Length: 476
Image 1 (tube, rainbow, N blue to C red):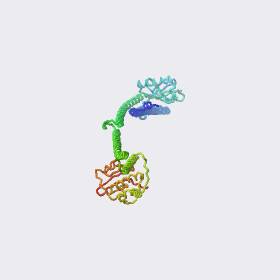
Image 2 (image 1 turned 120 degrees about the vertical axis):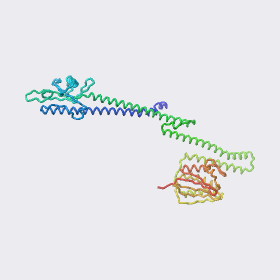
Image 3 (image 1 turned 60 degrees about the vertical axis):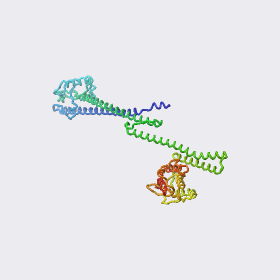
Image 4 (image 1 turned 180 degrees about the vertical axis):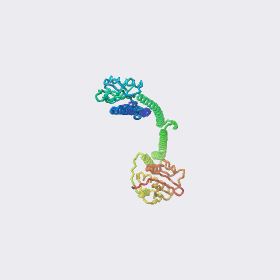
C-alpha cells in the first residue's frame, strides 16, 4: 500500500474534533427523544387505563346493587381532570340506545355516534382489552362489558323475576386526541430546543476545532522553520490555548540547544585543529630537517617527535573518552572511597616523586560510592596530575559527607588561579601556562557530570582546591 493511500485515509484534526462531539450530541438527543416519547406514552396509557377501570368498577357496583341508584360521574382522583370519560350503551345489534349523561352537549352526542358506528361496523373491537378507535385525526380509547338485564331509562338494571333479560354493552371511552396533540407539541418544542442547542454546540465545536487546528498549524510552521533553519516569528499571545504556547516555548528551547550544540561542534573542531596543528608542525619541521640533513642533534629531534606524537595520541584518547560519555553505558559498582583514594594516590606517586611533590591523604570515616571505576580513575587522575604540575610541595586528597553527598577535596599549594580564569579551566582545549593538552579537566568534568555529580575549583594565594561532589551510596 502506497504512502499516498495511507495519507488519504487519515482524518484531519478539525474533522475529528467536530464529528466526535457532534455524533455524541446527536445520539444523546435521539436517546432523549425516544425516552421522552416512550415515557409520556406509557404514562398516558397507564393513567387512561386506570381511569377507565375505575369507571367500569363503579358501573359494576351500581348494577350489582340493584337498588336503582342513580349513576353519577364523579371525580375519582386527579386523573379525571386530565382524562374525562364518556359512556354509551349499545343493544344486541350494537345500536346506540342510551347515554349515561343527563346533560349531553352536541360534542358528546357526536362522540357517542362515532364510537357506536365504529363498533357496529367492526364488532371485533369489543374483543380488545383496550380498544382503540380512530376517526379522521381523532382517537378514542375505551373498555367495554356486557350486562344482562333491562334498560331503565338511561341505566342498565337487573330484570325482575319474570321479566326478559337482554344483553346490553356498556362502553366507557375517553378521547385522547388533545393529549396526543399536546404530546406532539411538547415533542416538537423539545426537538426545536435541542436542535437549537445542537446548532450552537456544533458552532462552538467548530470554532474550537478551528482554534486548535490553527494552533497546531502554527506549531507545525515553527517546527518546520527550526528544521530548515529559517527565521520565523511566532506570536505566542495569539495562541488560544496555553498548551500550544508551551509547545512553542519547548521548541524554542530545543532550537537554542541545537544552535548551541552546533556552535559547540564548530568550536570543538576549530580547537581540535588548533591543538593538533602545533605538535604536527613540530613533527613536520623536525622530520623535514632530518630528511634534509640539517638537524645536527638527531636524538633531540627524535625525542621532540616522540613527545609530540604522544601528546597527539593522548589528545585523541581524551577526545574519544568525551564522546563516549554520551554513548557508552557506565559500569556502576559500589566501592569504598578510602580504598579508591589509596589507589589514586599510589597511581600518582611516581609522577609526584619525580617532581619532588609529597602525596598526602586526609582520612575521614569511610563511605561508599557507586560509580564506574575506570572512568572515575581517569577523571580524578587528571585532577591530581594537574595539581602535581603546579604544586610547590604537596598534593592532598581528602573527603567528607556534606548535604547528603560525598565531597572529595584535591588540593595543592601551587600558584593561585585567577578568579576570571577559574570558569575557563574546565572548557575543552583551554590550556593554562604549563598545561599539557588542555582537555584533561574537561574530561574530568564530563565524567563527574555523567555520575550525577559536580566539580568546582577554589583558589587563593596559599591553596588551590578542586571539589568533586558525588551521590552517596546508602546500603539498605
